[in-house]
Length: 519
Image (cartoon, rainbow, N blue to C red; front, side):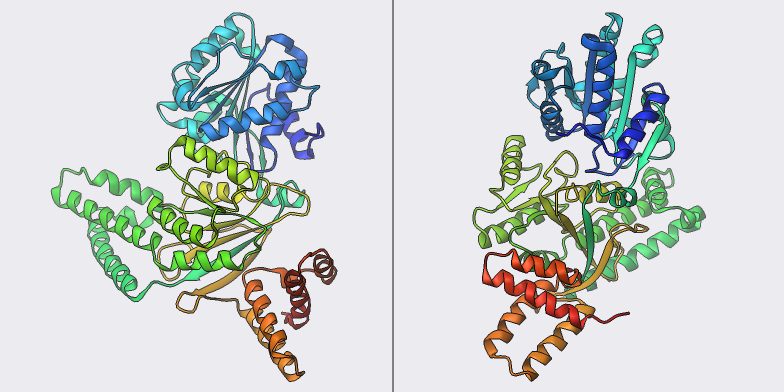
């Protein structure tokens, strides 16, 4: 690992130092938060030497192992040299390294009941302690707050305590105030637009793919919606403020109303939330999602690694069965029903390249570093912006020559968002539609150009074989943006291909570019 830092990392470290070595950093996933924090540790060690203790808290075992690997790969002349890297320990998820290790990484479940006591003891014995709280938005809950219990007792040792909170999405409101009180104020924000401009993450594109319900699903959705509207209007008669609340505030109030002393109101709130869950499940498990994802995978470059994100285990298992049948030995799945060791094994196989497609629920939203994964398919997603950013972050880690694509599947004319990151900018967005019966993707501008190309090939007397090959290439290109690349780039890619079929694809995209309509 090169010691040179990006300019944002140096700026951030200067601000952290100016804040007395305390503070929180919000930086997009894949931009180098880990490297920046370890550089801070290395600089502290230059001052404290053998007396420095680095304590890192993470939410998951996968993230713990990732930090251990990052420590092992840090430059040899940093962090005490090669012999000191042997002093890396892990606690949690089955690991029980001695607590006196210089670099100790805790899963938060283990840290709750021992880390505070450990840090206080180390400060009292004259050590300098650097606490790194990764994905620090997790540590606001009552039980997780136990890791900070030492803070009221460090008075005279405060000058030897340093902290850094890391997150791609720091919370707001009271949660942020609490984190600032224990980790230090927010000192730096490094968002997606800035990261793209400075090339610390790779170029990426988002494809919104609109899907439709089957007829029976649409009827059920509309019936549920009508019943919810009636219940909601009844509740608004007693609580008019519901109409002006945000979605999150409304949900919290409805939950509290389920225990209202007025039995009619309590029952109405319960019915509304029950119908809301049924409607959400109907949208999440819509049958078109599975066929769309399978047809999409068929059209993507077979050399690209694909992360496929779902919300429900049953859905993940269904698409795993279908894709594993089409691509034997190349597909794996990772979710809470698999067990820790099984999930660990499949992640390693994906990293090593044995698997090309990894299907997961929430288990890889944080803590999975696969720099060569360049395609994400959001089979069914959450409304939480934090989770959406984390999933995008899984595929945009920088690698030479890499560009990433994220495909977001959504059901049209429902409560589901039709935009993956509302309000976002700085990246290309393409709007597609999927027709499950025909297995087709509609991409209006592309389809218009493709139709013109095939018409001209027919008019010029091209053979049936050439037209069929062009149709094959055009079918693949429909879900990509390759036809919009620079002509020189298309020619270079064509010349770099080994197989005729791949060279034909790039030739077709180069020719199709001439039919692009200038808006």
